[in-house]
Image 1 (tube, rainbow over the protein chains, first blue to last red):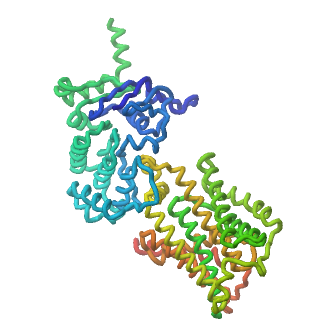
Image 2: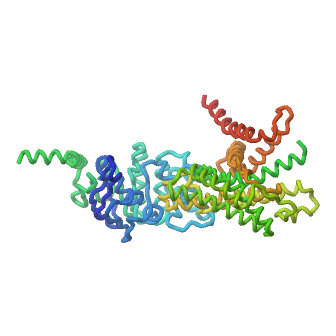
Image 3: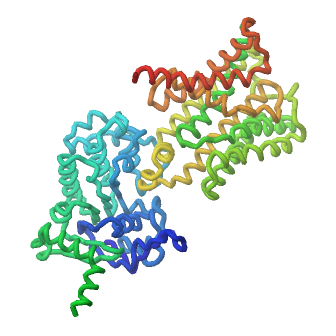
Length: 265
Length: 293
């Protein structure tokens, strides 16, 4: 479960570049829900994800994950609850390490790291099986360095890494944006199946209206650092991409519309 | 070059293998350009020498020297992690400070270890000439260090340290406390360098405050020569490369200095070192450039 209450983030406070990224954002997500998040550039999507991950400490407000207040807990310390796949495939996995070393690193997330061998034979087999499930043939390349793989392969492995150790929340930051359409489709299907299998509370930021409606069970639109649309259930099923785009336009032109309304009335 | 001069070069190379492994940990694993070593090497020598003269067991004295080196590494790491000073600058500050600290430790610029019991003393009486005993003894220690560091880097903790250097953002997202690993890595790195300093003092019979000048360049030279030789992505080969590279480097220096044709003097050492390191850095690039063209 995720609870964001009265969340505000101001970047560069007191400088000419001051920017209010989130302003009093409220959002509550039940456990096991897959939420898609849309919004124009600067709407606050990435900031919200950053606040959840711990990269951004909010100016005010509270962040609660699974009943625990994590507002001031550092990224590394809350990683045991939060798994994450980044937009850039190079960020989410470590190019200098091999596939199996990356998996070992992810498998120890949330656990104490000691002096035991990171890759014993039992773990090796387990990792190989998990990678084989992708059906990308990567199980035969477990000793290859990650930077030899394509962006799509790395994102697929990042998803596996995100589900290796039990976390409660999965954060996806436009994780298919850097991929070609075929690979993006593959990664999205993989995402859906892993989320279903591990019953993860998932928040996916996307720029694709189609993805936002096709996947997950709830869609949230941000604008000006606030939630301006929140659809779930029947009303979401009937929503078309055109509807969303229309709402988008309204949201962007909101101020001028208000002015017009004043003139008309 | 005589046999004794050759074995002397091997011995010095093996002593500096510990420096090379330390430099490898900082530069390659943590991606932390650390000049602290120019101070922690003589620090290790000074602490070991002073304690041995005070009658301590030389093994214990060396252990304390390593702790002192680790502390020096922690100072640099603190300046960088906690006070956000640029890593290179942080290490230069510690290095400069250590010059004074080393003088304090020794009480004077130079301490002699003549007729003192060192770690090597028990092995001198076994029938082999001293100039064989020294490289053998240090060689065994170097192999042990390679194994232990390799085993550490293959552990969960070591893997987290490698991720810290290679991709800190990803490491944090995987629950790795990156600052903790910078502290740990810098302590380990400088402990190894101080161990090298302690062995240097015990094999050469003195500790000198100026003996640290250029340590970083020598260590880096060994790392680069090793990488050029073995070309492997595997950690174990990189570590073996540190040892082999360090020994080859010393032999190359010895050859350069003892060749009559070149007419070099011992005082030309730093110039020769800089030229060798620059060559080691430039040559792979030239080769790559030609392959691309």
